[in-house]
Amino acid sequence: MKILTCGAYIPNKVLTNLDLEKIVDTSDKWIKERTGIEERRIEEEKSTASMALEALENALSKVDNPKNILENTLGIIVATSTPDYLFPSTACLVQGKLIEKYNLKNPPQVCFDILAACSGFIYAIYNAYNLLKHSEKKYFIVIGSEKYSKIINWKDRTTCILFGDAAGCTILEKGDQDNFLSFDIGSDGRYKNLLYVPCVDDQDKYLKMKGNEVFKIAIRSLSSSILKVLKKANKKPEDISYVIPHQANIRILKLVAERTKIPLEKFFINIERLGNTSAASIPVAMNEAIEKNLIKRDDLILLTAFGGGFTWGSILLKF
Ligand code: ACO
Image (cartoon, rainbow, N blue to C red; front, side, top):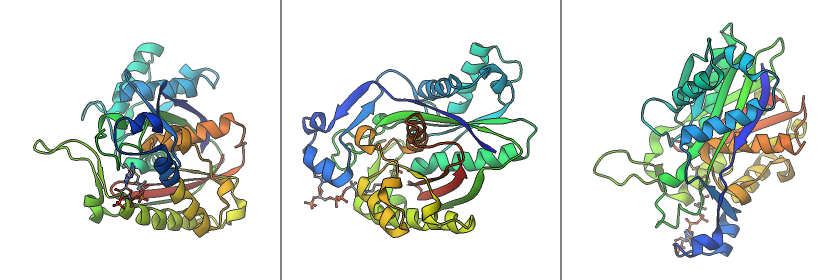
């Protein structure tokens, strides 16, 4: 099994730190120093499903005969915490559009969303990998699509500076060789009060986070998860070509680099331009690293994320 191709959708509208200075009591200097973020993108028109479809179309534009791939695809998983509906799932909405556009006779059948906040994409790949392994089909579509701008309280300076909208996609292909070397997936449900989005009637619907407490746990969880996947695959930090991390905070990544002894230069970072795009951040970053020719076939790459739940996970694979 390997990653056949990647794609992304990045909204056009840029929201800079200077724009945020006009909305809440913050400063460009504070945001840059504390998070590494300079600007983020906001989607004004498209839904989460439409962004997911755009990212998938971008991935399909890089392969020969996309219709043949779609007819041979087992399913679609969309990792998202910001779906358009509770149901139908974002994945079903994407599948519906694909059937119409490509006139599919054998469309992807196993279509569902995964909700694991910022770790959603890692969870989605883990599930897709295991489902595809036991199937006669050859491909699986995994998308991370997020529109956090709709669950952000734009009056809360402790959270509104962090997040942005985007979507990223990968297509897994089953073959003779398995390029996925090891997985580490975890969760700890005891910390709900540190990071959550209510969806009960009597509460507001915005994201709430005790950032500095989440910060410490994120560093510990990411570092230990990275070391676990390396150990499971009998690999060393120096074997890795690139770490594609979830982009939550540049200071988190610096401390994780120190703890794992993987040089920070090996971490692909685009947080300065996109902020935290939750489940979309890893596929978006991976797509960018591939387009910039930083990752080549057979390079060892490590995907890692931490998020609400708490959830976390890492995947070590040969690209
Ligand atoms: N502008 C100016 N000042 C601010 C802002 C702001 N936007 N936000 C907070 N402050 C102030 C606080 O009020 C506080 O002031 P005080 O000292 O007078 O009380 C001071 O800055 C420090 O606040 P902290 O919260 O301690 O700041 P910290 O350095 O921890 O940075 C941040 C906050 C960026 C949120 C950081 O804690 C973080 O990145 N946390 C982890 C986030 C994360 O990884 N989440 C998981 C993924 S997200 C998901 O799953 C949905």
